Length: 139
Image (cartoon, rainbow, N blue to C red):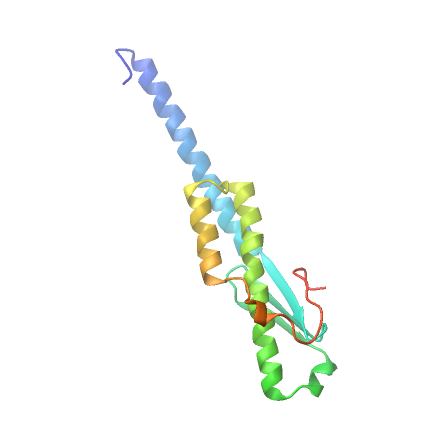
């Protein structure tokens, strides 16, 4: 593999160690950046806004007075739809962070993206906002 030259072996070990260290640093940066991600979605014509953190847990729920016109069952359903939209948008956000850190084509990158896509799938067409406009950035 290295021939008789110990310098070749030492250079290979240094190169391999540097690659492992760089991958570990990129993975740590990925974890830190994913932990800081927040995604917001809105529904009911802007009367409902839900923000989730990088793990998909709701961190903020805003309801304006227009929701008082909704029946309890409608309100609960719309909140859940908006929550799922916010969670689904995490996959896109995480994809951007993966691309910038470990690379979308790396084994780690693919595993992270696949995990988010499985946990937070895109909403079904019948989950479209029934009460008004929706955007991924919450506006």
